[in-house]
Image (cartoon, rainbow, N blue to C red; front, side, top):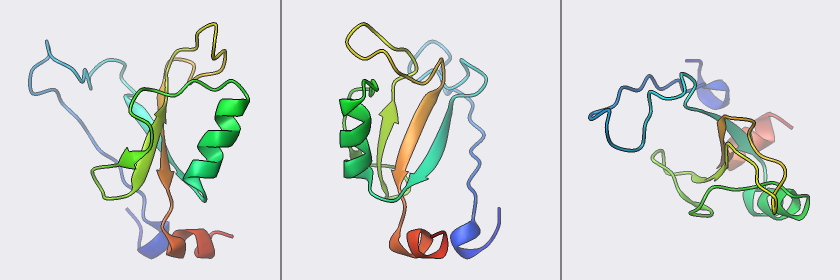
Amino acid sequence: MGRGVHTVEVDLMQPLDPDKKPAVHQTPLNHIGLWIDDLPKAVEWLTSRGVRFAPGGIRKGAAGHDICFLHPKSNEEFPIAGEGVLIELVQAPPEVVAALR
């Protein structure tokens, strides 16, 4: 939806096999993605403050942007997490960063 740097992507997902992962149908809100100006710096800063990330680190996402995920559940080592929601951090492309400054 939208145009140019103001485009918003909404993915409606249905599992190919409800018995296999990823279980995109559980919870009803599978995940939310947020543009980040400097993803490596954000991950470093959040980790230093006790935020738990899902395994896999920073990697290319389906749309070609670098991504990583905050884990939905905290633990003793990392007491801050997504409160039950998988949160995707997405490296914003330069044109988005410039337009939204």
